[in-house]
Length: 391
Ligand code: USQ
Image 1 (tube, rainbow, N blue to C red):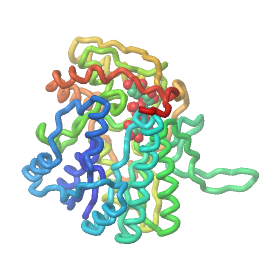
Image 2: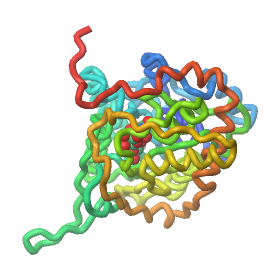
Image 3: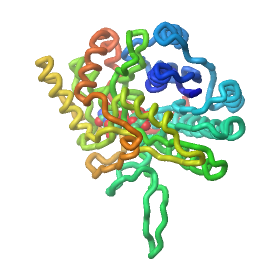
Image 4: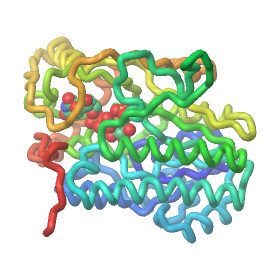
């Protein structure tokens, strides 16, 4: 299959390219390296060293015999998107090219607007370019489990049957996100659903949980590492806890720590995306997949990291309960369904503890680098303080 990955330089995009090449697909990629710039702007960097994309692509050639056919450009530029789709004429496009940090979107009005405009525009550009150039292509769009929020009832995969005043219908499950970033994904989902109704586009909207880990089976040497962010803006819960414990710093559990989410290892996220590509929806179908493996509260994850350190290294890292910078429920019901991936053939590769041990081993090779990121760990982006910065 010919597959175009938007955001091929990112945490998920890069290892996805390796997997797809490994499975014999022809891989095209788009990126404008904005994540590298945005992370540098908050005085941070990937905790694992990563090469420039040019160097990475040379390394890919060495291991896979072929490399990614790369287009440098911005997915929010419609001319660029049309050109890239026209030149690649893909069978499927994976859209991973959005601003992906909830805290970044909550820094202030500038960042909120940037996230709104860029995320929604890139998806609209993709929709129109596919409709006009390759209307049979499969759009695989990365949404988030955070679109649903934390309702006090079970969460279905996209749609549910509801009865109201004696009549029934199958309707989209109500969305209730808790950052501007997560709301952009809700708006994208609405736009994709409508595009499907208008033009019969084949779409998979992936509601992905929080991804953790450093490894996939194709990451054969340090030159193929994917980025790994641990700062308060770009790092996510379990990856941050792992790095904090290595550094001997208290793990930053926000508030009561009862916030429960769906989690998935990087390797299994790549497995799921590959399955969705190789088993596409019917022509004209809008398919929603809840993509996570197991649910945990952040408090449980910190305890798990603590147990691993105690057992494997005889060290007991602290769990620090810090003031929660976010506006979210800290204790709540959480029961999302996730059957579709198993129906497609998904099976977990390693358990969560094995993945964390692998991550500790990778990160420990770069202690100095980790040390240099210490200052970026404590939360500084407080949801309620978000405002317009005049400077
Ligand atoms: N949290 C902590 N301590 C930390 C970091 C986070 O307790 O040091 C808590 C947060 O308060 C939140 C939960 O962990 O309750 C998840 O936060 P996160 O930063 O790990 O993940 P989130 O902001 O939700 O966003 C991440 C990705 C995003 C993706 C989303 C999937 O950055 O791109 O869409 O996970 S999900 O959470 O299922 O919506």
